[in-house]
Length: 445
Image 1 (spheres, rainbow, N blue to C red):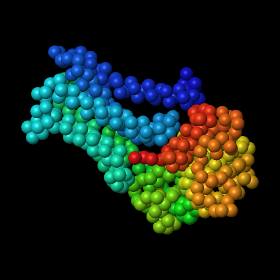
Image 2 (cartoon, one colour):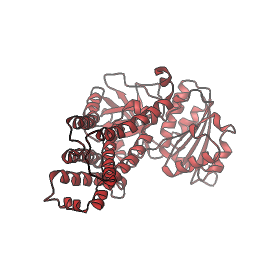
Image 3 (tube, rainbow, N blue to C red):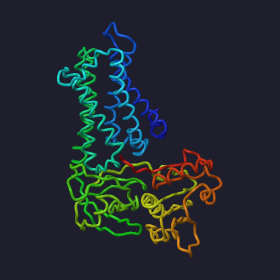
């Protein structure tokens, strides 16, 4: 059985889902064990159930964001973060509906909103709900509110801890379902695991990173306002990675700070002595990337991600679709395949604003000499003498170039969200199996 699971990623992913459901519902089932309060109607019990399930889901959010390699390797960071967002909203709705039902069924409980005179357990509920609300609002509307990434990330952690801690304190204070010692111990264990995961991400991982520093070897400008950041390991062997993966980068500061950023590797996965990243100048950090001189200390946490051709060794070939800086992980795939002398066919469809925005243009052309590589450039703003494709990567363009036997290849798409949505719909309309389509989203908040 164990051997079967090791070679069956779908089975492993299904087991993680079952585990999530069990952990979400098990504390509630335990709490329903004797003795339960008497003389209370269905709606009150239903309200309590929502509160406990919401609290359990909130605690499990720390598992989803702890970068546990075995979990992340089953789904990829994109899916985990999307699941984290959606389940956080579901948990928040449950936590919010919990008191609303009580207020409707037992109007006298409205007096608990009188914060100065309310008992401490009610105050904790109010403060915990407000912390949860602030966390949800600042996450969903972070960009419209113009909250910088790094302060948001720090406040997100603090608000999450407050929401879970205050929610647990409220449940203990009410005591109807936590009156027995062993029930308090069970929920305390859940809270301690959540706290440990926070400490693991914020303290243990940075400590491990400190033991394996890197140094900036070169920062090179590329077309498309992209910079190649090259690092070499300092006093250790570095790490190898599957082409297409990414790592969290901390540059010129201690890894114990919360100023780390995820970037895809652009170098070959076969080399550990020099790790390169393709970084587009978009935000405050990336616009300053060229200012760091060689010799600057850096730290990495990785590799992460399932956006890689290495997981599909039996594929007849690959269709790679990139937009803008989305070429970075795909360039890593092609470089690695060239070093390995991979003889399978590769089709690259690369969309950019103009001919001068084609990042790694010369390098991609050179790869044709060592790979069975076909490149289709798609320009949104082309000169009059341009003979290639123009406009956008849509259904008609894909139908023109992708193989007739569409289930024999695996498709990797990395681009801006609008382009990715368009390509995903087009591939579905062209009967490409959904199991053969792999998307790389990089929107952490």
